[in-house]
Length: 465
Ligand SMILES: Cc1ncc(COP(=O)(O)O)c(C=O)c1O
Image (tube, rainbow, N blue to C red):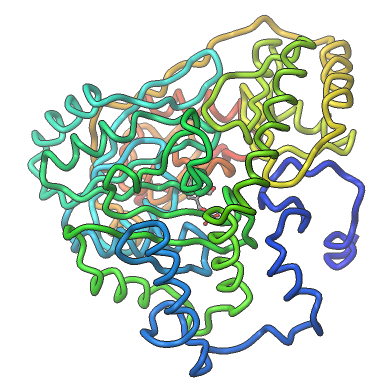
């Protein structure tokens, strides 16, 4: 089927991102705009409109209004997803040769920023949930141990990045983590790609945004966790630790010189939706609906895992000896399309649109899958990754990436230095980054991971020749 046909096809239950549910939950104002003569809204940075980096015009006004409504100093709308704004943030936070402390579940975009910005990623291990194979959240004590170990590396650490919530909707005590980082006089960037709607603060039991706890920079992916169009995102900043000039010059370095007016309008409208009462009311009802769905599924024997984001449902497939990647294919055959298929789970994103009749259909499909899986294996635990608590690549990311390379079989790669990332997508969390050594433990773990993600991890790796 051609692209145009695919884009206009209907008939499936969309439990994937973008969270606007194929337009169903787009903000009314944006829907009205899209109903106008096609293309009428596609404008350049005209004098009255401006752009994310221009001090005057409608976009500057809109960014100022959003920041002041949220009670922070500044914000910049982005048209290259959270990816672009995370990368700009990192370039603003650290100079070439400086180090940035980041967890092992960091999104690949941050490693890419280290690569082209000449930064040193100091990667720290995080707790692992071996019953499902997920990275988990960590607490202040854990972070204190990380700081202690990181100092032994004797690098010039310029900033810390946190990822919260995770793709699956786990959320840490982010306030305590920010306090710890600030106690070291370091700025913190929080990748809140999956937690934009936390700024709505609609209920005390739903996590608050890191912005409420003084995070210096926070990036939201507005298509993942707000009802924005794909590629829309926002970077918020507050406090004195990061110079806005450095942020702007870094955005300018990476941003297209022709940011899409439609995407910028989508940034504005989706943020408004999260902060204004009409949008909040809709969100409250979506969350009620999502909670009823989860209760219904659990009461009908569907194995769901607990998290902090009611709009994300984690099906624990490995509890029944099944791979989330295989189960995803079975759901797709029945026209229910999930978001994040992993070896032990399948995460569905309910997003901001309604899924009222989903419960019974879901239970029926799941029961059929379980019944038909003759090859059902025993429930098995996932091995934790063989990462040290803290480590940095053996050779700088950037020079490794730029080195002459050769392709070797993964099983023959012991002792070699990788020039590339190995990174199943989604979730986009690197299992190996450029400059890291493939020691015996890493190679045997990667080979095992290859069995879990057969189409995502190749059986070869490019290493420095
Ligand atoms: C934790 C995390 N951060 C950042 C991103 C990048 O978001 P975007 O697709 O908006 O560039 C992703 C995408 O999957 C993500 O999972």
